[in-house]
Length: 269
Image (cartoon, rainbow, N blue to C red; front, side):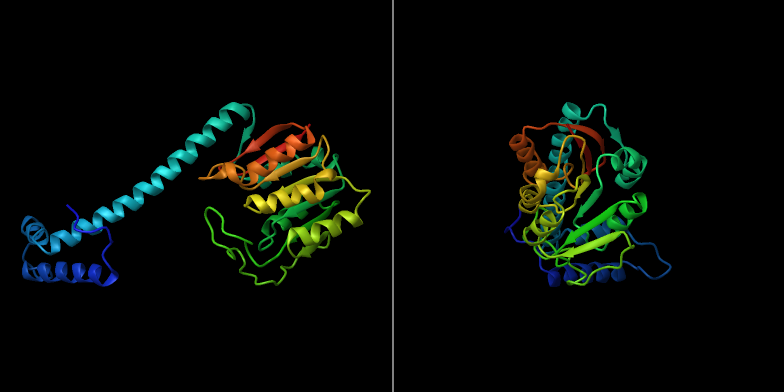
């Protein structure tokens, strides 16, 4: 029976380790004599050490089981969604390999490629390499998440602290929050058609802002690559939710082209 519901402090854990070391010395550890493990375990399990040890191990077990259950539920819900909607879609762990293989058909569907969530620039550079004749537009605050997400706190992914990464010549970066930069972009590109929209902003509010600001540029034939549409605990509440609302509002459907552990590539129809 655990005496209370608090995990042992770091100091208490250190005490356990110190006690274990003392017992090892008492039993001959570090000399040529053999350690009697049964005797060691017996001494470790005597009060008060036994209570603290059981407490510590039980707390760790609870934490591990919590994470396992989250993963199981996320995997189950994701598998059900895949089974219902993506039975004929390609599975590939590398979204950029898929986009590169589809570059010709994607390129024919429009002139502009937008990367929403540049972070350190790896995804934007990959798109630039696959679509050298297209204009690549990268959007990011470069200050991290604007609010807490299921797996990250507000401000995470903001290592660049507002600075812009270096980019190839066919890339233009737009620094700022989506609700500030996307309306300006839309106003200056009224005669353009989006070939590919890559969404890597994680949270619902940012994804919704994307569709609110430039959703009218998306037409049947447009491609969208979501970096975190599925595959994690709570995925139904973020990019997926905003995309579902967009489809309902526009009365559109999509073909699921490819997916990985979390990313999904779709083509509107």
